[in-house]
Image (cartoon, rainbow over all chains, first blue to last red; front, side, top):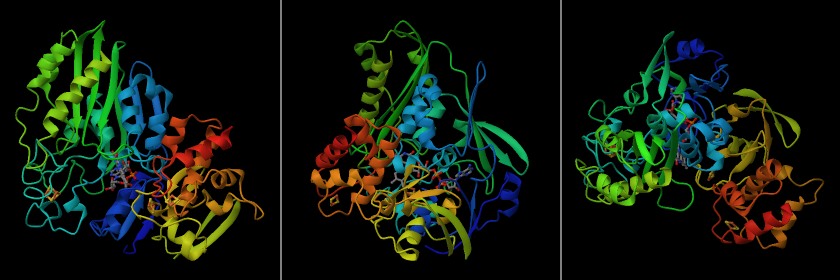
Length: 321
Length: 151
Ligand SMILES: Cc1cc2nc3c(=O)[nH]c(=O)nc-3n(C[C@H](O)[C@H](O)[C@H](O)COP(=O)(O)OP(=O)(O)OC[C@H]3O[C@@H](n4cnc5c(N)ncnc54)[C@H](O)[C@@H]3O)c2cc1C
Ligand code: SF4
Ligand code: FES
Ligand code: FES
């Protein structure tokens, strides 16, 4: 690893005043340090956000919703009794992240802003996402790459919590040079077609301060299912988050989001609409999921993800309804 | 270079180091505490596990600057006055140690669990050591040793 300056500012202003194009924000460091070690990124300055007061709070206001600071640890989200009860999908997604050791250090902000896991990107390949000349995955080892939303680059977004947060209709708060803006999760993440060099809208030096999740309806239930290749910890091959409002076993409203399939958490608003008013049964689910991802364009080795998405979606809806 | 103070195995510690070093480097190289092992270096194997404020973390992915004024426990802090911690005894008794490379990390993940939850179920034990790879024993003796200790 190269050497670098290490700062622990006490306010967001101080962090942003010290930021220049050779800096990286640093939260738990579980992703940043991996990138540094492999020389994918070589910042001269790391700016740790941990001494900035107020970023590590979880606050619930009844009737309004839940605020989670960006420096809250993934393990704290997984274990939080209120999140487990009211926002189950998020607790389950957090619990599925990495290993206990990494959850104890990794933060929500870092989880949302982590870089992709494409092995060419992580390895010694000058690919498009590193401002190089070609994508090595498109004709290479692309078993874990995206089946939809790719354009020139075919990463999947690695964050589990992002998938749950989109299903929960959360908003992300960003501090940008003294101003605060709030964007829906869906507008936070971007596709390679928008900008191939980054995965979200953040401009250099902008800090995610908080995630806000609105109060769930009384009849809301939610779950997260993650399919991995190995039994123990791993990134998702495909994951699905389901947030459903239901009466008895009829779906009134559904928000389904998939991970592991696209460069950002992926939803199909048409599908969500089709679920409205449905009485859950194996037959009905088989029918509605049969046309999912018809627009998918799998690469040579990842076509298996299409049936996997359908089956996981069926499974989660059966579990939940 | 920078002075960094933290608590190590119950004692105050002051090191004068480059803040771009990892906790693992400082423990092994600066302080000569080689009980903490260096395996994959990228957060995948758990051999480098130590406790930070009572929670298991991978010291290969923690910078020394991050532990300033915090509390660190390594495997050297488990034994006292040259005698093994009873959890270590159980590991020996149950054949949970072969090459021993994963053992320090395994012990600390188990110790963190037992501090919070003195009588864990088998599933809770499995979850707690999910970030610790062992290439030798096949986990059963390790889980048995932890279970035996918790009884
Ligand atoms: C072995 C291994 C397995 C993993 N498995 C999973 C998994 O299964 N699922 C999953 O979702 N993730 C996984 N991760 C990825 C990730 O490291 C963690 O999920 C973690 O949450 C990242 O948080 P951090 O605080 O350590 O981020 P950092 O490494 O500190 O930061 C990550 C990125 O986010 C930026 N950043 C951090 N905080 C902010 C902020 N507040 N505002 C703006 N930018 C910010 C940093 O500049 C950096 O670019 C894994 C990582 C490893 C090493
Ligand atoms: S998929 Fe994207 S990150 Fe991977 S090699 Fe292609 S351009 Fe690079
Ligand atoms: S050496 Fe740290 S997890 Fe493998
Ligand atoms: S005893 Fe050899 S790796 Fe576990």
